[in-house]
Structures are given as structure tokens and as C-alpha cells.
Length: 280
Image (cartoon, rainbow, N blue to C red; front, side, top):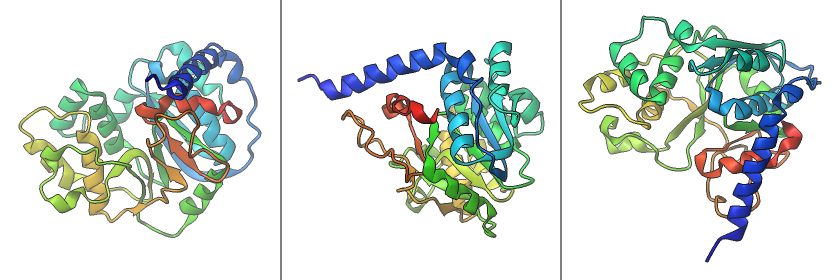
């Protein structure tokens, strides 16, 4: 039997995204009225393919969280000059930086090798290269922010030196770099992290060095998971910071509301990202 609600939702998402993409030159001209300043630097790694999601994510962040000191979009190298200019027109706090300028040449060879074969290797290189000189947020481009995200300011200002992470809804880890069963407990999603201090990544990078086969899509997230566990990072409230796919096959967005802070629209539910044009 055909799941009509599911296919209707996917069709609606696809059409809405197409219309939003076509309207991007006009959308970025719409002023963002938010005046609240937040003492944080935000980083997001994205590509030309994800330009509509990146624009929408940035606008929802500024609308509902506030204006960061800097919002730095790291281009994986595929963004065109026109797209970079379009991103910068969203708000004066936006900057676009090429990934090669950020990561430099000082990382372990295994990280560069990973980045050469897998986009998640590029993301790992970015996370290792971010200068954590103040509270810093990393966010994927497929994260949408909601009115409840104003509480992020409290977390940023909280006198707590440990970082905060987004709990994952399933175990999406590379078992080859997990050495003990206990290391898989409470899996961490690398899509949204509040860094309150610089981290020591050596513990995890040693495992990347020992890996005999090529790293895969989940290796980066596993190394992030291990590093944040090592530093006793704190989980964000999963009712407010949502990562769930259990509404994949129904029509409505089960979790979106004015009360939540964000939802990570991973690939299984990406079409539901586009149900919320009012915030974009």
C-alpha cells in the first residue's frame, strides 16, 4: 500500500524548497529585525548544493537566537562567487571563508587524507581548526531554529567550562574506532555543538591513525563523540534540541513548535525542514 501522507510530505518539501531556492535573491534582502546580540562565534560548513538550507538555517538562527559576533560559513570549495555574495547579504555578521584558508597545513596527515576522500573528513578538519577563543557554536546547515532557541543565550553565558552536544537518536558510530562497548553509550551527534573551551583531540586522532581501512561517513562523528565524552561534555535537552526520525513516514512535523530550540533535519526527514517558511 502506498503511504500517501509520506509521499505528500516529500512532494510538498521538494516543491517548497524549489520555490525558496528560486527566490533566494529576494529573500536575502528581507531585513532581519532581531536586535539581541549574543557573545558567540558560529561556524557552519556547507556546499553549493545546500545553499537554500544554509540561508534558511542562518535566518532562523538570527531570528530566534540573536545576532552573533560572527557567523562564519565555511565553503567546502564548491560555493560560487555569486553564492558567497548572496550569503553575505543576509546580515552584516555573515562571513564566507574557504575551507583551505581555515584548515591550513598543521593538521595530522590522516585528517587531510580523510578530507580528500570524504566530506566528513572535511568537517573533521574544520572542527580541529576552529579557533576557540570565546564560546563557539558549530551547526550543520540542515538545522532549523525555533522560538525556544532564545535559551541558547543562557547556555552561552553560563559559567560552565564544559561543552554541550546534541544527543543522537540512534547509534551512528564507526565501530572500528570504538574499543570498548561502554564507549558507545549515549551517542553524540556532531551536527550541533556549543564549545566552551578548546578540546584535546589527540585521544581520538590516535585511533584515526591506527585505522587500517579508509575512514567512512561515520568516522568523523565517532571521533567527535569520543572527544566530547573524554571532556565530559553535557547533553542538551533532547525535548528542546530535537534529533528524531520517528515521524519520517507520517505527514506532519511531530516535533516542531514554538517551545523547541532547534531540530536537526537529517536526510530521512529533510523534506520537513521546508514545512516552516514562516521562520526562514
